[in-house]
Image (tube, rainbow, N blue to C red; front, top):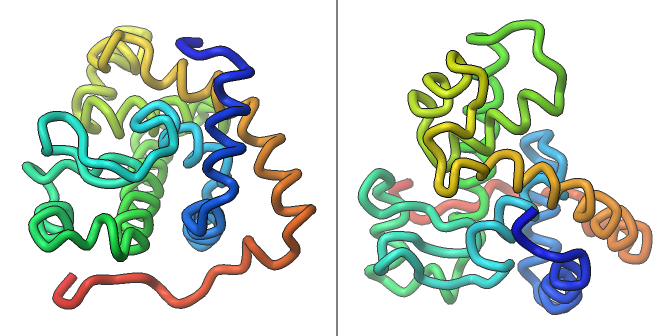
Length: 185
């Protein structure tokens, strides 16, 4: 893992005090993804900070790329990634869920952990890159650092417990609301 447990706990403590925390939990729950998994992606992407990254190509908490996703370009150019980050989180969760579904259809017989690792790899390297890696024995082969999915899964183990405690201490925070969208998206 590329981060220590105390660093993850520090990220979470800062993040849990923001409205984005419940929003991430609600959106992950809406698409039936483990909220700790989405938090692990956000941790790998931004240290759980809503920001512009990757030379202003990555937008928001989970770094939606403006070069491939018009919603991210719209949010970046209109400042909505700061004032209304919910639709980007919703889009990211939908995108992760689509990759998970596609992985299940393409590679039947894997375990849930293997599917989630593949989904994380695909989030970073694209579905094709993760598939090529999977064919060669490791879906991370073409990811940043060659360990993106494995690192996310290591983080997920810790975030799963942190999210569970948050939900226990904040009843109802995991109840999804209406789907969050920007006009035209």
